[in-house]
Image (tube, rainbow, N blue to C red; front, side, top):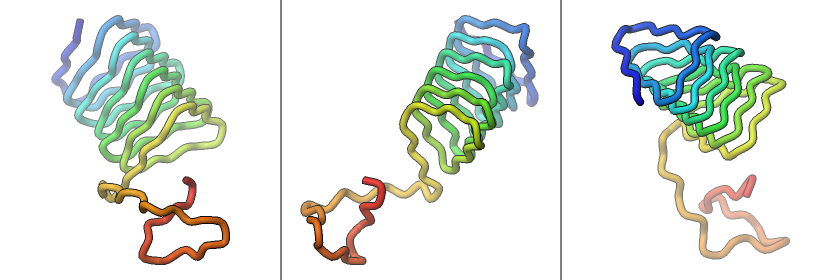
Length: 139
């Protein structure tokens, strides 16, 4: 089951429970429970009472609730204090406040550049780093 909404601002409060996907083209403010994906082509705000068991996808997103699933934002993704997210994140920009629980992987790529391949010969202990090689920090 999918629900399609076409208005510019959509608000679903804490008393809403959905089993199925929710898709809209306008802004979405969601504070209820859903077992399914939340998708919008605009801004998404997930409230502190929200429980999402599925993926979320938006142009930009501010998350305050609990999500078990992946979160994708074409632009900016904000995880506010007390957010619980178990899943992977993909966004151009990521902001994480103190007190967030995040279990998963994050791919943050503000320039949307394609990462270069790792060099065939990684550095050995004591070997000098050459500026022409891609950075290995964090690997």
